[in-house]
Image (cartoon, rainbow, N blue to C red):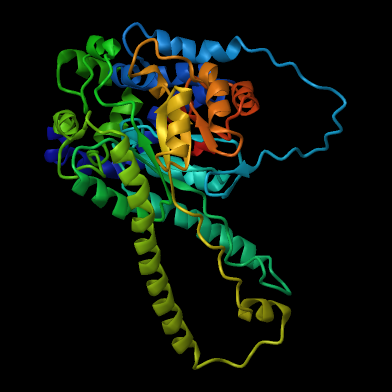
Length: 453
């Protein structure tokens, strides 16, 4: 369908977007308001989304046994609760991320490719809500929004938070200028060219990403048979079947046709989505090994240090210019509000140390090797959402042995099959420091994005 955009049809549709979009989304929004759990969200997403794109989001490898077991394994675990524990409300859900950053919840959105396939605002929408909720955001290598777009969106949230805090200051500005910046993580695949990897890492560091999640469980694409049955392509082709699918989902079809064509913004923004599959296959490197992992763990802190130095120089230059401009100076205010405005804000806290997480681990011996020998800052237990290797173990089943092998201090993230709040609680109880959730939030992203709030 790329030739629609080449003809400029989306520009012709743009003047009508404000009127047409709410009309087409009316039923979808109604369905969303009646959702009470993730299964409800899944059904609502299926009703709005092109069948082949929903199949891509919802499917797993082969017979989808790993996909199903990832969730059912949580439900096999019982909660043996304690009583009379003397708890007081409100109960804090805050915790710490790998660099010691405070985060508002123990769960966060997992990295997923191609958000603009689901909604035109793409990863920017998810990153914005992550900043508002003060939880980490992890950007996929195959994202459809760039590092810079994500950083700008989150900076806008941080600036708004800082302005709100400053407006309430009366006698002191001790809290002004110190709004928390939520952790940004770059999910990096095992790519063939180190020059390409270094370029991506430099862009990430320059945009305030402090952490990398090296994803090692995709050295080939899983056998996703549902995609073959639905004729999945990115973007859709003009076969009769795909045209019929688009016409049956008018809200999704308008969202696709009335906005700019999406591309994979990090890997090759000049490569059209139709040809990205062959591009990715050429870049993924199955020979990537532990020595390459060690190189990344050593290289990333150096890249971040250079980015920090550049940022510090730019900040010093801007501060000097501001001070010079203010030397003309008006008479100092004697009002409380004026004193608060004139007070020097406290400097922001130092940025957290950079780290690299090893993502895709299901074995205790590899988790221990990652943190004790290879230099990884933590481990991300994941079976890639049941999308890669069929009969891969449910992550909740292997979590206790991995925590035991790593020891109590090493940082540990878990994803895979999380669909309920008690799934998060079970993962934390069995040793996870944080939990990542994938499909559930994407079921919401494809609707109008204010529902993410």
